[in-house]
Length: 125
Image 1: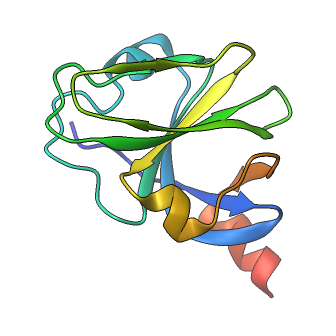
Image 2 (image 1 turned 180 degrees about the vertical axis):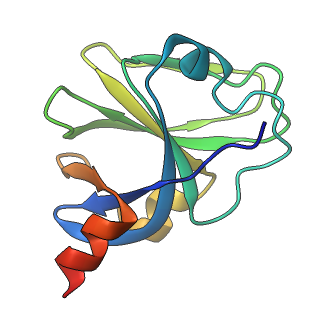
Image 3 (image 1 turned 90 degrees about the vertical axis):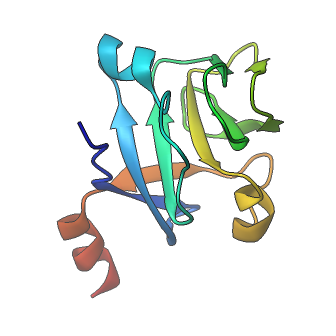
């Protein structure tokens, strides 16, 4: 089954050119991006609850953004293939294609939010 990227990501209340798949259920969180060949630019996965991610069984590296309960960035990291990363205090994680953190200008202390395509249209008009 294909991953559905159906939420828009906002950074400090400004839309980012990134669509995310929200993985909230146990099975969605368990599967994550496992067995995918790549994560295309402009796409990501938001996993909640989550404070630890791994890339065992994956053939590519990721950028990882750890968030607290207010969706504030508390740690930025790179997740090489076949590795694990964790963050004490994290309540959720955003997984992005490698190098996305720098390209998008994400910094510690930034605040994330998410909306649907319809909500994004309202924000932009």
